[in-house]
Structures are given as C-alpha cells and as structure tokens.
Image (cartoon, rainbow, N blue to C red; front, side):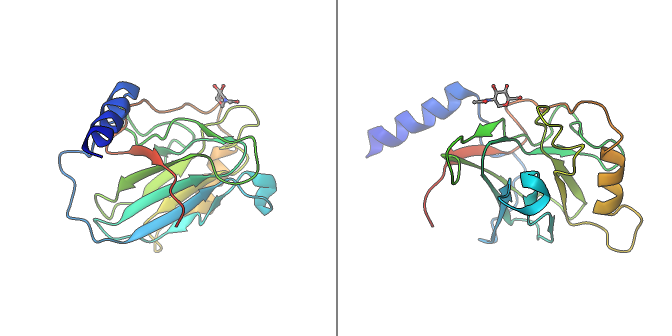
Amino acid sequence: MVAFTTIAFSAAALLGFASAAPNTPPSTGVIHRIFAGSTVANKGLHFEPENIVAEIGDLIEVHFLPKNHSFVQSSFDKPCEPINDNAVFSGFQFNTMAGEAPNVFTFPVLDKKPFWFYCSQTAGNHCQMGMSGVINQNFDGAATLTAYKAKAALTGPSISGKIPSNGGRVLPNKPL
Ligand SMILES: *[C@@H]1O[C@H](CO)[C@@H](O)[C@H](O)[C@H]1NC(C)=O
C-alpha cells in the first residue's frame, strides 16, 4: 500500500501536476462539484452549476462529461484566455463514451474574489458559445456571468492555460 502510494505520487509528478499551492488555506471540508459538459443545456457546452458561491478553503471538483473539455481561470475583462501564467488549468479531459471522464480536477478556493472560468476547447468554440462560469460573482456589480458570456462571444480562438497550474490537481474520479 505504501509502495503503491509512492508510485502514484511520482507518476503525478512526472505528468507535471502541481501539488497544493504554498498558501493553501485550511480545508473547510466542503466540496463543490461542477460538471463540464451537459447532455441537454446549451447543446452540451455548459458548466453545471455555472454560478457558484464558495468559501475560502472549500474545494472545487470538476467532473468532465463528453466529449473533450477543459477548465481554465480567466479574468472578467478578457474571457476565453488565462488570467495569467499561473491560471488554474485542468488540461483537456476527454471521454468519448457516455458518462464521466476517468479523472477529475480539483483546486481550493483561495479568496472571495470573483473567479471566472471557461472551457478552452477550440474545436466548436466552446467558450465563445457560452461554456463559462464564475465562482463568487459580485452580485451588486455589472460584472455578471451574462456580461462575461456576451463578451466571450466576441473573442477570438480560446487560449489554454499552462500545466502545472496554480494549486490545481488532476486526480482519479472516484465514485461517490
Ligand atoms: C482534446 O482537445 C484538445 C484541444 O483541442 C486536443 O488537442 C486533443 O487532441 C483532444 N483529445 C481527443 C482525445 O480528442
């Protein structure tokens, strides 16, 4: 068991997935599951839920439905591109069969600032078509998810993030 754990960790290291960021807050134990892709909403180009309220130390866990999606952190001002070189990025997680991809992507909520995200799949222009969401939107302001999507529709091809990403981890998708 110990040997297996060691192997699993070094395999993750070889794949380049970062361990938790240095300033990770204490865990609250709360997990928010977000499903990337849908069988019905917006012809599949949808995150469910797409507007999340979370506390510092909560964990976000992204599950990937068919066929081939990613999760990338952006700014409000520039949709469909990474917020910076350390943007949270899942890589592409694909599943051509029905159901969820074999891996999930997790990262901790580090602060209460609005956190915008999108799918960077360029085949089918997922972000431009409305596949985006937000964690901790400011509900009093003009920076709404509707406004983000309207701006996203006018952008060029999406840009993916870089791995290793800031505090994010790709982990096996375990049944609940
Ligand atoms: C998933 O999408 C990415 C980006 O378009 C592409 O590079 C990759 O080959 C795709 N994977 C599969 C299995 O289709």
